[in-house]
Structure formats: C-alpha cells, structure tokens
Length: 241
Image 1 (cartoon, one colour):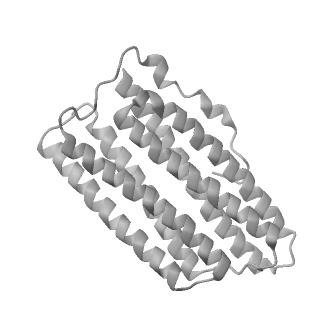
Image 2: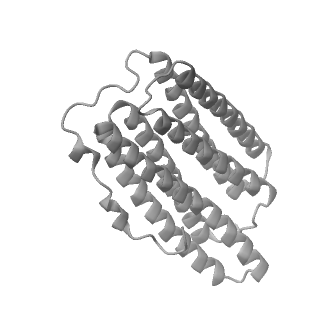
C-alpha cells in the first residue's frame, strides 16, 4: 500500500455472521491430528512475530549485537518448522482426501501465513545487514518508530487470531479482521509521521532515503496482514454457507 492511509471503505466486506444461520461444524471433525498441527503452525508464527518485535527493538536501541543474531536464528528455526508443518498438512489433506470443499482455502491460508512469516524474517535480516543509523538523541523519532513496530506487530497477531477463529469459530473472524484493518491504518499514519520527521531532519539525503525505506519495510508487513485478512473474510463466508 502507498504512503497515504488507506480508507476504510473495505469494511464493507460481507459479514460472515450475516450468512451464518446455524452453528458451523468443526472443520476437521475427528481429525484432531491436523488441528494439532495447525495450532502448532500458528503458535510458531506468533512466536516469530514476538521475536521480530523484540529483536528490532534491540537493534534500534543497542545496534547489532549477539542478542540480535540470536533472534534471527530463532526466527529462521521457526520458519523452517512452519514450512515443515505446512508441507505435512498439505500431504495429509491430499493423501487422505480430507475436507475437499475447503482444502484449497486451508492450503492457501497456510501458504499466505507462511509467506507473511517469510517476509518478516527477511525484513529483520535486511535490518541486520543494512542497519539504518538513527541518532540516539532523536527521542521523538525513536518513540514513533516503536509505535509503528507495535501496531504492525498487533496487526500480524490479529491475523493469526483470525486464522485460529477460521478453524474453530468462523463467526468470530470478522472481529479480528476489523482489528487488523484498524492496526494497518494506524501503521500507515505512524509511517507518515516518521517520514515527515525524517525529511525535516538534518540527515543527508542518502540517510533520509535509507531510513525511509526501513520505515516502508516495517509498514509493509501490516499491509500483508491486511491482505491475509481479505482472503480470510472470503474463506469464513464460504464456511458459513
């Protein structure tokens, strides 16, 4: 998404609850093995987002150090485990011919969420390599950067909660989607404030562009979370029909 805050017209997405006339059955019925796998997948994804936030805070406040390297290793381990789980779920769904009506939606959802984690890990790794220099005396800037990081993290955690709801209680998906969109809009506003600070500062043009790109990379994660929510809203409606 661009620099300007996205209007909330997209809130007009149909409400899954409006088309749900009766209780939606459990997606996997008696197949608890798959439920456990997907729960673990979502747990690992949530853990990765926590490492991302804490690692970037360390990076901003103290610069590159061993603790930052450790966070990167933890995120890469989580990403590898998530990919392993995703492939296992794909294999089970097709080999045992489970949930044919929703199989494609489940696989697309897991793929989108894995892609989101992949971008988060790549973003953190790029920060480790191209750490943008920020004056430690720029208190206002650092506070706004932490605010951006916080709302971006919340947007991804809300996407994970929406995904959990899809499997357990599709009627609750809309509430989490609303949260994602609010956080995404707040992330856009925070990114704009940061860019105004950047380009009104005494940094050189090269430094300004470098820090601006870093802000865009963080803000872009909230955009991806919103993209996942758009797909989830459709999947939830299909489950409710």
